Length: 174
Image 1 (cartoon, helix red, strand yellow):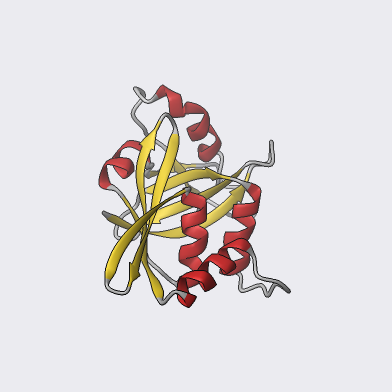
Image 2: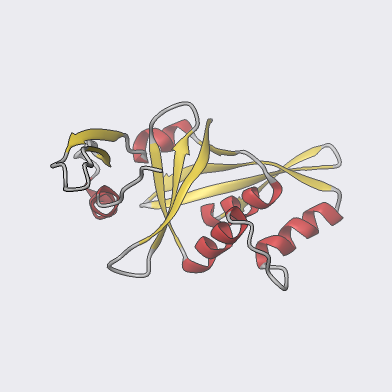
């Protein structure tokens, strides 16, 4: 398993689609995953420390797990099939380990609430992650010179081309 952190949550300028971008903890690869707008908001609200008047669904899930004396030990982006990512929430309940099937967006939204690590299966990372590639860009009048953009990928994975085209247009610098 490869540990990742949330690099960003992005909104497409062409549509209302959102992407959570996970960054390899000890590497340079990024794993972009399409997510729904509500899940994107749930992740962003927690990362930005915004207070909400009533618990959101992921807050309720956290409270339920804690009420049952459970603990989220970690979440795993575990599989990729037909352009769909799969995840598992790994719980410790009274000394027993339990894996619960989840959408990646829900698993990530819960992980940020309980401060649990996020992992990606090595095979999933190898198949779907992207590495930044330094490119020279023309310096503009404000003196910007170089920027990183998402680059090279295996052209045999044509089914992910639309996704990669969108990601290539993102500026992932912090």
